[in-house]
Amino acid sequence: MASPLSLLIGLRFSRGRRRGGMVSLISVISTIGIALGVAVLIVGLSAMNGFERELNNRILAVVPHGEIEAVNQPWTNWREALAKVQKVPGIAAAAPYINFTGLVESGANLRAIQVKGVDPKQEQQLSALPSFVQNHAWDHFKAGEQQIIIGKGVADALNVKQGDWVSIMIPNANADHKLLQPKRVRLHVIGILQLSGQLDHSFAMIPLEDAQQYLDMGSSVSGIALKVHDVFNANKLVRDAGEVTNSYVYIKSWIGTYGYMYRDIQMIRAIMYLAMILVIGVACFNIVSTLVMAVKDKSGDIA
Image (cartoon, rainbow, N blue to C red):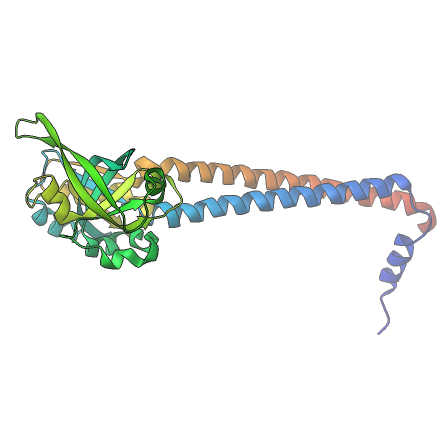
């Protein structure tokens, strides 16, 4: 099949000897500039998408989307409140927890950590934390065995590994909220939690029943952790859940703690898109100017 006449003429002129040096230089510079601009924008947008994916997988998957805590601690009638919260539309899962600060010790090494008492079975429905515990240790995590799971950063700071024993000192107070001698508990490191993030350096978990025993809380808890279907509507859903408890409670969601990260990602992404529009505009101008100069350069041959 014969090639079109216009294509043959175009190829003949593009390969012709008589070509302006300035036109060639501008064309090469324009092409390189456009390629570099597009490459930088692609890398930048890919980085932003990667940050957002890690935000969803590493943060929103492991931290509660919302928390409800009683004003008057400890929370004694939490079971009734939990049953009501689980029926709120938009709530995917809810589980009780106990939060306290402890000082963990191994030999001459000390580390202040935030300890969370969780129900091993309910925690699997609430978050993806169990999947980040090394060597499937979560399968053996249960109450009554003096067990603790610590973050990888804490383990490195204390120079301990899975299977070692550590001591933890827990603040102790009487009914009048007067501080007493700290309670000292010996615990078995059943697993290491590795999130490759901030939690690795200041977080530990123990079974809920053990936490109640160590803190002399009976059957009470600190609060109820929530998982919602729509994470970007967490503020409203957590507020709705708090209202059905019919108690004086504090409510908070992940947006108040980690929302700034998502807002920063969206802002940088918008800047990237604006830069892409500007690069496209410059590319169009360069293409048009190159074509105009090429036509003027060949006008003598054409005419």
